Image 1 (cartoon, rainbow, N blue to C red):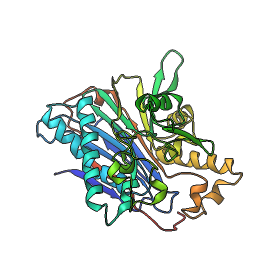
Image 2: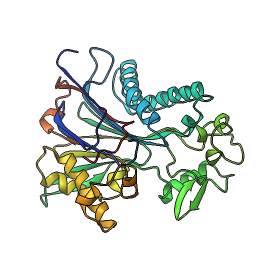
Image 3: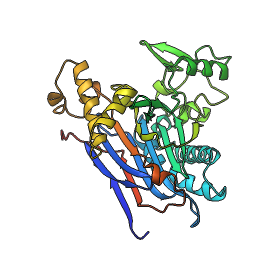
Image 4: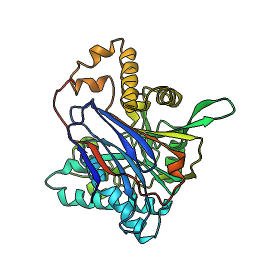
Length: 362
């Protein structure tokens, strides 16, 4: 596509990127803690549909992988393409379009698992939390499956302050309402949620209740050898234990809505919603996502009674004992651009993360 910026961030340890999207400016940053980076992310600015006459907008995806990078990498390549396909088929963006795209991506990945099962059985234990945001026609769509989070910075004109508003609903067994949902969905399973080493886990195995992937907890055919014994349940199950359907929020954007912070849970383990919003509001836009990452690392270092400068020297893998992989995308909202639904702005495609390994201490 003429004039389109295509960026692929493969070795993105400590990477940051800044630019302009259809609805304003953006800032991205990634920091790696695991020996193999399991986070993936993307930002797409331009057509939201496969059809030439379809809507334009901005798409953000944060995919926090677990058990390996395969699921997050697959989502990074497939989910947005499915959204464009269904937007075209349905003649517009909607919550239903996004839900269909999530479920189609899930089915495609589970088909891949089935194909690779005998040669690569561990792919059945790989999954990804998926957080998506779409700004299109002055409307904001947020879809989440897992425990990543998006927070809105909203100007409260009466007190002239920027307040943090959490927009995503998280699916983590540490949340009482999630445990209640699991019990209601599996009333005959007394072990659907287990407190293990002071952490609530679904079937004692995983903290999240929704994801793409994790085939071993969705299809009984993968709950057997050659999958490692630690992932296998002692008894068969007749319906999926985890779900892929996202929780979706749809709301109109207003001039008071200043920016959105999308991040994997690695950021939110260290910073509160308001702390993150205050940093974005008080710092220059250029490199602000990296500022958030640095603030999180400083907090992680403080918790372990060490210094940020010393934390930076710790090799990936070992560093996971201090903090998780962190992906942050800050989307600034220009109300003049957001309100112009027919706008044809900068065409951008940025993909980052997943599969990076090594011991660089950048």
